[in-house]
Image (cartoon, rainbow, N blue to C red):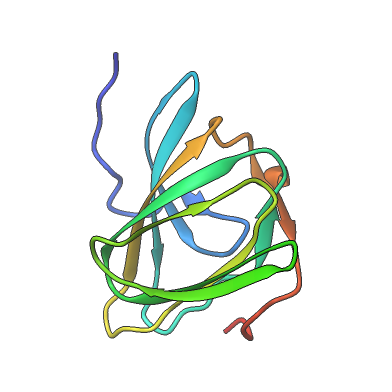
Length: 126
């Protein structure tokens, strides 16, 4: 059993360039808060072995996802959730005037920066 509080400053940068604040983890999953400044654009990546569930808790954004021939771009805001299955190419950008904040559950737990593979950007990275 464990508990804690999110750091005021980010704990690190994700391979997609978003800020990560570590939350909890258990044997089968990990939890983080991801932030992107207003107007920010992440780098496009895909994951080798993990899948994620995202819950937007602040700000507005668009998320682009591509899996095989299927491709979609969705606008999301507070209360919206989406999934990133293993191997899905994805990129997101903060479209509102506030920083984007997403709570992300990763299963299995995030293994490290080598997990993310850079792919071709959908949007130009700023």
